[in-house]
Length: 463
Image (cartoon, rainbow, N blue to C red; front, top):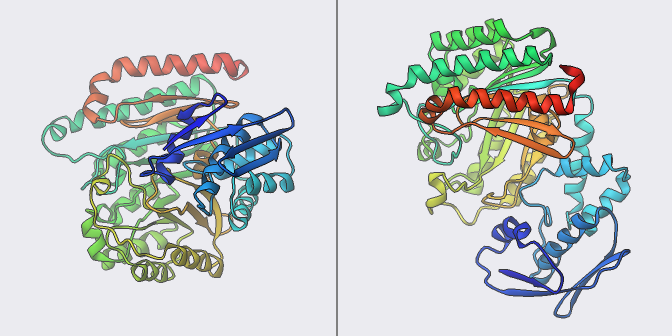
C-alpha cells in the first residue's frame, strides 16, 4: 500500500502500521488533507474523517491518517491504530502533559480507534503500577547469550555451546565477569543507586554451578545491596534447573525467578525446541515455591499447530500453580526466528475466546494486569500482558515498558538505555558472543565514556 497526500507526510511513519494491517494490499490511497489551527480534516473518496485538535497536532495528524485507512477498509480492531507500542507509556505521556483521564479516553477512542475494554485495561494497569515506579535509581541488566537449544520462535541472542562458540566460551564468560566489574565500578564512581538487578538471556540458568556462583558472588561483592528492591533471575528453561542451582540463587539474594512452561502440550514443546516433561516442571516449581521465590510463569498463545482447545487447556492448567506473576505472550513472528519462515500454524483458532478465558482466569484468581505491550510482528492482534498477585508487581518489567529509568547492561546482545526526558540513548553490544569478546576492550572504554558524558550533561549534581 502507498499513501499519497496533498500535504507533506513522512511515509516511514506508516511502515509498521501498513505491514501489520495491510501487508498484501497494493492499493494507492489518495488522501486530501484540509487542516487548520483548530481541526484536522482528511478525506479519501467519499469518506471524510474530521476532528478538532485534541492534543499534540503532529501525533494526532499521523494517528488520524492511520485511522482513516482502517475506516476505509472497514477494519475494526481492538487496539485501533496502535501497533508496536506501549499503550500505558502513551497514556502516561498524555497525563504528564496535563490531559485529564476523561479527555485521554476520548482521544484513544476518537483518534486511535481503541475499543472501550482496552482503554479500561490501560487505565487499570496505570492504577496498579502506582507506587512501583522509582526514578531515583537505575537498573542493572546482565545478559547471558547461551541456551541448551534454540527455541524456534526466538530472536534473542541465544547460541549453542558448540564448535567455535565452545572453544571461546570460557573467555566469553570471563569477559562477562570483567564487564560486571567495570560497570559496577562506574556506578559507584557516578554515585548511582541500583534499584533492580535482572539476569536474563539467552538462558542464564544454562551456567554450571561454578559459573553461577562466580557471577552471583561478583555481583554481590560489587553492588550495594542496601538499595536493591528486586533481584530477578530468568531461569525459564526448566531443563536447566535443579535444587542445587536454586540454592545458589537463594544464597545470593535472588528473590524472583522465571519458570516458563510456555505450553502444556508436549508435542508443541518439541516443535519449538523446548524439552521438559510435566513431571520436571512440577518438581522444579515445587522446589522453588517451597524455597520462597517469587515465581513468574510465561505462556505463549498461538504456537505451531495449537488449536483453540489446546490453548484453553493451557489456561486451565495454569490454575494448578500459585505463581505470583504470569506473563501471556501473543506469538510474535520475528524475522530472524525459524517460525517466521514456516507455515505450520492453526489458522482457525478463536483468539477472542482464548483471551476472554485468560482475563476470566485472572479475575477469578485475583491477578492484576500490571504491564502491557504490543508487538508489530504479532501473529494475531492480541497484546502481551503481565499479571501479578497484589503487591508482586515486577519493577523491572514496569521500567522496561514505561522507559522511565536508566538501565546499565552487560553482555552480548544487551543494550544500555539512557533516558533524558523524551530522548533515549541506546548503547548496544554485538549479539554474537565471539564479536563481543573480540571488540570488548575497545567497546567498554567507549561505553563508559559515553555514559559519563551523559551524566555530566544531564545530572552533574550526582557526580
